[in-house]
Structure formats: structure tokens, C-alpha cells
Image 1 (tube, rainbow, N blue to C red):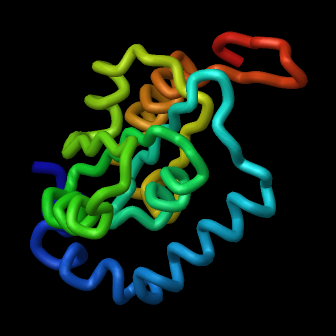
Image 2: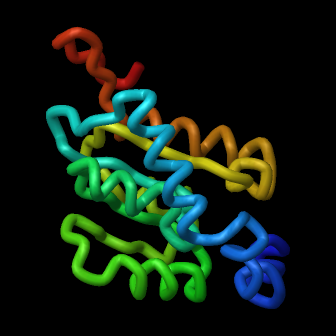
Length: 151
């Protein structure tokens, strides 16, 4: 087990939502950001939320019409997301490491979000590089109707 996963499992997951200002406040903040940026589903209608935690970005993306693959290695945080998501449609929850998930996923997506402190918790620069390579492989860039695979 990685040092970071152990830290989440034994300490951080219990205080995660409280530490970040509370669930409702963070959902409102993310929803406002996505609204300001006019984040809407593109041709695939799919998004990935890497390090989704309890769903601060996942739920606003679902509510904006995306089908969301929410990925987190913490079973406790994923369980909380499963509980609060309730009847929200379009959620696929994956309790996996980010690189493990992206290595298995070949479906193209319109959007990948990785917000908060996820990237700084990656175990090494080599891991970060691998993550970015895999993310680039599934992300599809659309600009004014022109498709740019792998940009």
C-alpha cells in the first residue's frame, strides 16, 4: 500500500469533507466554476473525475449532463460518494488508482478533471508522466467543431 493511500485510509478520509469546507459549500463552488467556464458535454458526453473523493466535482458534472467515471483509491470516500449520489444517473464509480484506471480505459472522453490535491499526492514524477500520457490518450480535444485526437 502506498504511503498516501495509507494516510487516507487511516486518517484523512474521516476528516476529508469537513477539512475542505463541507459538502454543500464545495458542490456549490464547483457548480459555479463549471457554469462560469461553460463546461458542457461534447460529442462523447463523458467526463472522468480523477481523485473524485466524495464527489465535489462529480455531482455538478452529472447535473450538467455528463456521464461521469469517478475514480478514487479510497473505498471510504467512494462509499460516501455512492451514498450522496443516490439516484443520479450516469455515474460509474471506480475504486482504483488513477494510472490503473486509465490503463484499462480506452473510451474517449470530453473532459478529465483532477482537482484539489490529487496531483501532488502522486508517488513520483514518473507516475505523473505516465498519468498524463494515459490521460492524453483518452481525452479528445474539440475546438470549433474540429476534432484533434490526442492533443
